[in-house]
Amino acid sequence: MTARKAQRTARLIHLLSERRVIHLSEAATLLGVSEMTVRRDIATNQGQIAFLGGHILAAAEIDTDAPYELATAADSHAAAK
Image (cartoon, rainbow, N blue to C red; front, side):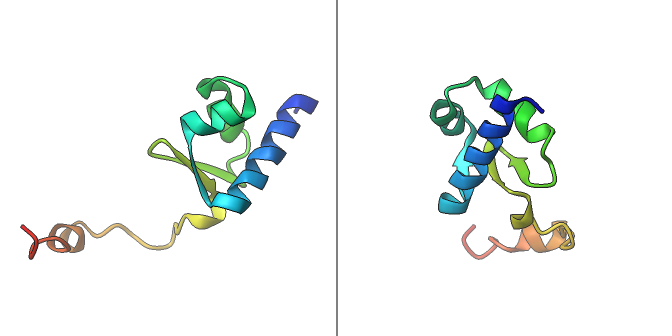
């Protein structure tokens, strides 16, 4: 990992500790790089940082043990419909 990449990663982790979630475009602007560069940085740091639907968050924030239940999700907003 280059020094610049390490600095970006450290800054991104620091930002996540303050905000929990950052949009990809905002992270790119704050870091002064392209969105693709941020994506690449995340890809090489998957143990610490995760990318989910255009948003960046700490990997620890993602609950990988909870399975997605389609039936539960389908019924969750049935009353509002």
